[in-house]
Length: 177
Image (cartoon, rainbow, N blue to C red; front, side, top):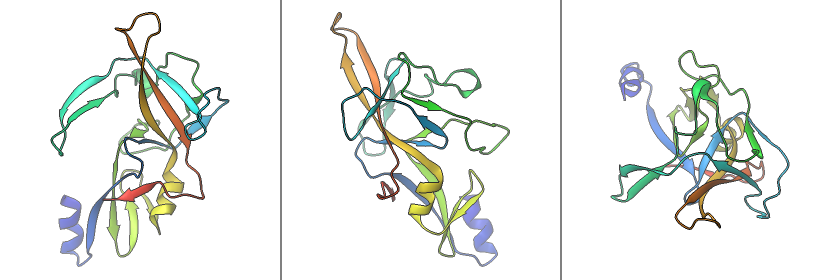
């Protein structure tokens, strides 16, 4: 990364680090999301939003496995999300990121931060953190998995639901690769 060359030239050691959820198949919501009432009966993922799209093939990932995704197909104009159901978790005005986007996309499978002089820097948002848990608390509102459900009326039709949980302060659910 160009960042490494620039700061290393000035005698500062830095390293880009990928952060991702600990949970297998999990993604995360960057702030700000509001968690409303829930009717979904799962204690771990108590919230549920139905996706208004079909799963799309993205190709083969770095591990040689087929990779599928849903975004950005549900993110429409002005970075707004569209759902099939009344959402139980809604996107609020987000944390301003790079560029001139006031409310950028806020769902990710991973993110990159910079480790420099024992601190974590998030260049996308211009913020600094002492620990990975501090970054998680300051950046992430929740985690989700994607569940495929067959239509009860048409077994050929599939629906996709985000099964969502809030980011809790008592646990660390993010790791550095």
